[in-house]
Image 1 (spheres, rainbow, N blue to C red):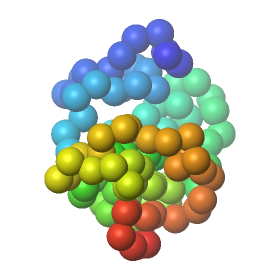
Image 2 (cartoon, one colour):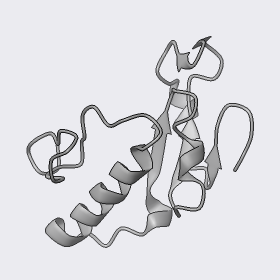
Image 3 (tube, helix red, strand yellow):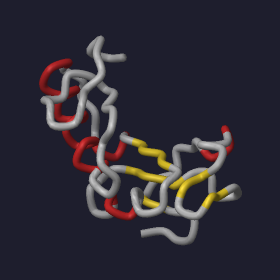
Image 4 (cartoon, helix red, strand yellow):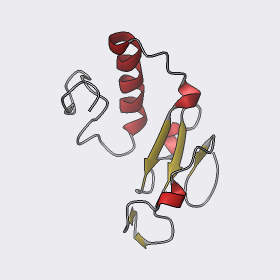
Length: 105
């Protein structure tokens, strides 16, 4: 991982990977990661260059108006609110905007 360690919820961001981020608040952790990468690693990442993927219903819409791109994956295989397969390679795309399995935001 960039940073060499995983970040646990409640702790300051110290890497590009966060474990246990609460559903419906993942956009907040993405913001913290991007801020950390800019300040601690000197990486000039634009918000529009950030892409987030999640298979759970409800985690993508909160990214609307953040400047980040977000896409729900595993839309073809679902178990209620969670995708069954994680993601298919074809779903990992650099499409701009925020889109869940049903609509764009």
